[in-house]
Length: 183
Image 1: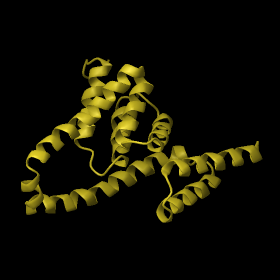
Image 2: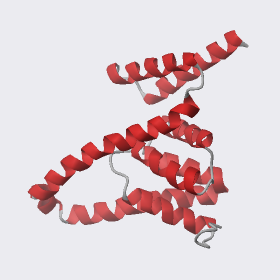
Image 3: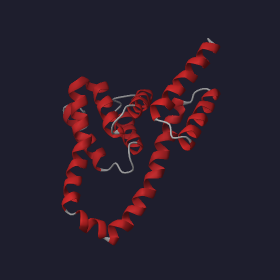
Image 4: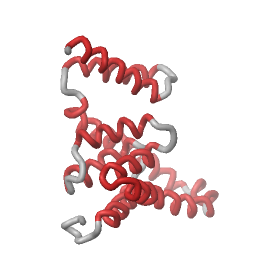
């Protein structure tokens, strides 16, 4: 149950992820700040550490990052049923909006006001993504050497056409080497 609303957890999870799915612009990273706000800060359903793990693994899997993260989050807090509910909740708004946009695609495509508004929406997504990354930094980076892993991973992502899975595996290898050396 969500004590503040008196809703069963599955319904609360569906409604909150529906809301998140409705307002997630800019790809998978923009969901992180919203998940942290709703499920870490407000409700305490998961810890920041768990969210970071979910995001790290969800980003590594093939498919739509937002769906991957939602499924893993749902599974973490309520098993397979909540994983399915989370996926449907976060995906339903996109399916509904895209169904409408598809019908009126030509009108949307040529509408100067929509095009101008999207310029602002795309720019506004950047601080959302950066704030999510900054919020998780204290959990992800606890030792000075981890800054090197972050910098190396960032440079690899920025300059090389490498799959995200390889970047995560390289990070895992670096972690194993560092922990192996330091005991």
